[in-house]
Image (cartoon, rainbow, N blue to C red):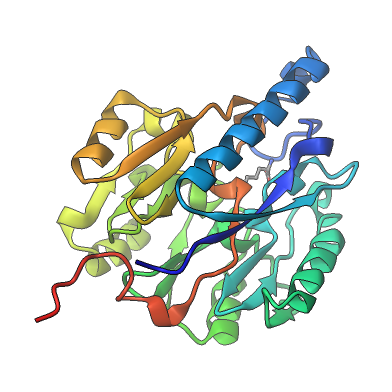
Length: 296
Ligand code: ARG
């Protein structure tokens, strides 16, 4: 069994949908019932927290800030491996204000001993954190999404800072504006992904590295349920309410699917994964992670 997963969450106290920087965002709909959606968001957040705890995770919850509603998606704030954190740089002005409060929160986590180092990206690099940079514990590499929010230069920046193998994946659609919307390495080694979101070259890179029996294709319906944006911890998968199809695919593969109604966050283009930031990922655990290996 792995060490306990440690996850950072941001409480939705200041959450709203007040602008649109991705095609899923619905600020006009939010305006129709701000109090109702706000209350629903708090209930959804509590249900997500409970599901993560039930899946065995330790949670650290920090506060967001007024005027920065998308702080509830801490996956975009940085990339963490081996206690080292690389701070994100946001593409859109609407989210750039998050950089300072997140940097303060991570500095506090360093003082608390949760992180050992907090670093900054080189000039000219846009990189939106773990939302565009997914650690694959089975293969010991980062899948790095670029082309919508993070730029191509982020691929080298991630490789240089962490010194780990990286595989770039070009995101070619606006709906999959972050890699975690369309791509999810599961703890058992499978990759759940939505093929139309990736360029032909990127699909070839993926298929070179992952055997066909470990590739699980998501449908457009799964994508719209934000089911690919899932938190995978051991045999548990936490996600927003999913499709019958995907639930049975995952169950047949031995996963326990825990579903939460995250509709108020889907109105901002987010699901379970991007509401979390894993703080405990370790490169040494790679390849010895979840697949059960018989020791002779
Ligand atoms: N409204 C947010 C944005 O457009 C949603 C971010 C969701 N994060 C993610 N990693 N998918 O930036």
